[in-house]
Image 1 (tube, rainbow, N blue to C red):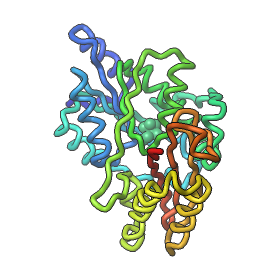
Image 2: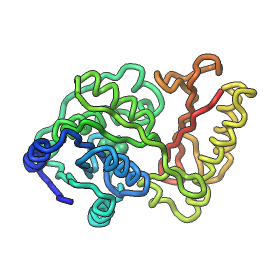
Image 3: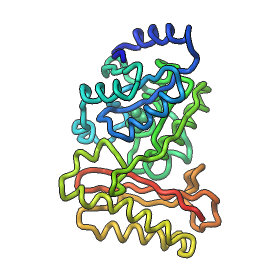
Amino acid sequence: MKTVNSIKDLKGHLAQERLKTKHIGFVPTMGALHDGHLSLVKHCVDENEVCVTSIFVNPTQFDDKNDLTTYPRTLDKDSALLETAGCNYLFAPSEKEMYPEPDTREFDFGNLACVMEGVHRPGHFNGVAQIVSKLFYAVGPCKAYFGEKDFQQIAIIQAMVERLNLNVEIVPCPILREADGLAMSSRNVRLTAQERTQAPRIAQTLKESAALAPDKTVRQVRDFVTHTLNNEPLLHVEYFEIADRHTLMPIDRWTDTTRPIGCIAVCCGNVRLIDNIMYNV
Ligand code: PAF
């Protein structure tokens, strides 16, 4: 695996690769890699001749500066994991490289950005679209891999690809979970031992809620999840929405969609965790 820090070098290497293959796959990350990320890399390695992974903690997508400063950074360990996973190029640019001048682009994602994470993390998706578009221009992948834990992020990136007419297929990959159900996340390492014992309640409660639908109403299921989790001493539900998987618009009745999804953000102590569940109704 080659580690590259500049866009110019990356483009140079990939131009050489393109003489031999058309299949360049890409996994954008912010590092602190866990098995969830490595499963994206595995999909990418299996489906493409060349796999590029980026590690860049993107400042423009953090609405909370404390979250940005405390975001785990483990480049040496990440690099070793990527090498073992069969990645060909690690792109690890500096902030100056990605933002030689401030990115003033404002994306309008309409309703997609006006719900859930879009409401609770103002500016977050604009920052995601800024960096992911820059990374797509730098790598020029035919496929890019994203985890379904960030379900709304995938919808936003898909919309961005359509708006900018980019020629890249977005490949959503299933959430990877710890044995107790907790969705894998780079932020999990920041949980205290006590928080770590409560965090799996999020996934467990979502699973329990799936057994209630569609006999209980959407509102009853929403209340069940919110109340159950808020009763745990270290958990605080920021939002829980049941929405259509495509438009992400919240639903009031199960018959409002054939594809409902429940999306949640919970503060576990000082750590903000997200998760989701698909309802089969
Ligand atoms: O999902 C992430 O880790 C980030 O939002 C991404 C897509 C790498 C952009 O910084």
